[in-house]
Image (cartoon, rainbow, N blue to C red; front, side, top):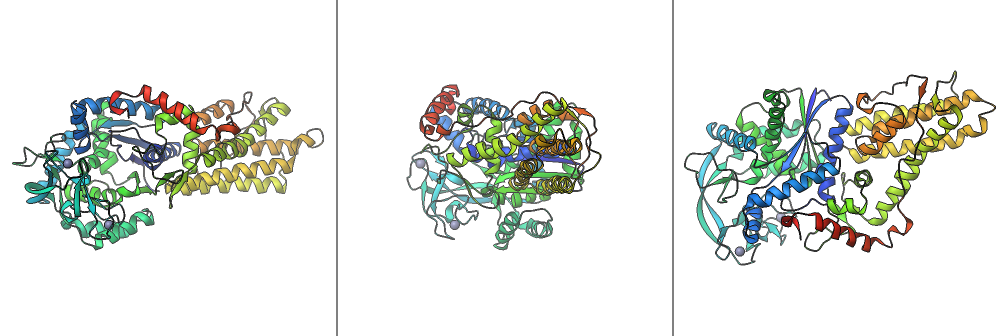
Amino acid sequence: MNYSRWVVTSAWPYINTVPHLGNMIGSVLSADVFARYLRLRGYEVVFVSGSDEHGTVIEVEARRKGIKPHELTDEAHEYVSKLFKAWYISFDNYTRTESEVHKEFVRDLMMSIYRNGYIEVREQVMPYCEKDRIYLPDRFVVGVCPYCGYEDARGDQCDSCGRLLNPEELITPKCTFCSSRPTFKVTKHWFFRLDKVEDVIKEWLVNHKYLDENVKNFSISWIRQGLKPRSLTRDNEWGIKAPFPEADDKTIYVWFEALLGYISATKEYFKSLGVEGRWRDFWLNNDSGTAYFIGKDNIPFHAIILPAMLVASNEGYNLPTIISATEYLMFEGQKFSKSRRVGIWIDEALEIIPEPDYWRFALIRMRPEGRDTNFSWSEFLRIINSELNDDIGNYIHRILTLIYRFFNGLISKPSTYSDIDLDFLDKIKKAVSRYCEYMDLARIRAASDVVLELARSGNYYLNVKQPWAKIKTDTNDVIATLYLGFLSIYYLGLMLHPIIPNTTRKLFNILNIDINSVKLTPTVVDIETPHKISKPEPLFKKLDPDFISRIDSIVDEARGRAQSKRPNVLKW
Ligand SMILES: [Zn+2]
Ligand SMILES: [Zn+2]
């Protein structure tokens, strides 16, 4: 990829709740692994996201709790920010939509779009709930989808056919708060003329080199239906005041402003470093790449609406380079559900197993890449015990222990290699270059397959070579085996570093190599010898075999501990 630097982003979590494992793998964790990979490759990276805190849900929730929306989001933002740190998420800036830099940036960009003639005022019929005394934008009206007949379509989008909707298109609409049928009132709104950028966006999509097929096909077929103007404003009080003339009582629709958070967060980051202008290198230089990690339900907003706003601003912003949209992670065959308590939330996870690397590894192995996947406890156990411990951990430990036992930890190069050695060296080289190819395209689970295959080949190689049987008779062969063993675990460590950063840091300490000074290249590089390692220790522990039979009580206890640590606004 011919870029000098990257902005990596994950979708902004809506901060009325704690993210669950599905949210984690869908955006934040995937983005973190990708950001860490790019840093390891030597790119300059800014990794940003933030709490999405405006909009109707939080306004209504705060009202019901008798507090101000700000009180709710202050506490929730602080708690979730800490959780992301605990999960080793390496954000350069995890900010929030109440940040002053963000609000100012949104208003400025909206005014550029306005001045460029992409905004028009229209009277709009909006659903209004007489009982709740609130306009019901977006998702707060549900009804039957006029296109596919899905019964639970929301006012802004149908989850079944994926089309964006307007609330008045719904057949038999209902207020999501009280289920009564809303009335429709006329109110004035400021509309974004998506239709005026349709051709530009379509051409950009068609010619895009890196977009996944699912993102490309979905977006192009959506554009074929014709892009319609979309309302940019809302009648909410809680949000960013609309900057347009005579729009004093309106706020900007949360979705439009949160998308612009990717840019404002970069701007805020460099401002905090005292080099404010540098954000422009990342967003306006065309040798900078931008990567977005989202769930598939967010495709239209990232592949159409965000690029449309950037084009309409006419300020020369880079359009998305990579949009990695995951399918859904199910939980024991069901959808994650807060109301039905189906799933595991990220604070509960750390109460079950406090080392995030286990969760990170398992979730990457289950990443819904190209298809829906299912989190099950039995699969979790298999991944931790068999893949992480047996295949990877055991192999690394075997090699290091042999080096330590036979050569006091000293690694040197052999005078010759056998055919078996050369074959294994070739496997290492192919694994590293394939890993980089997959990771370049954000195919993270596919890249993790490559890592596991290499560890398994390593175990096999060691079994065939049997250095313990030759240490007295063929020292050169033992040196060759352990040098290549060392080279392979060095690369396993590098390739795993973005996924399990804490454990690989421990590994590199044992290897006596400063992980911060190492770069990963797609071409395998020899390691300077002689090189001395420290005394090896096992990197991973297996889960008890009775983990599965005790899982219900383990989860109950973890849930109790997590609840007691949550701020009141996030308690269920
Ligand atoms: Zn539909
Ligand atoms: Zn209602």
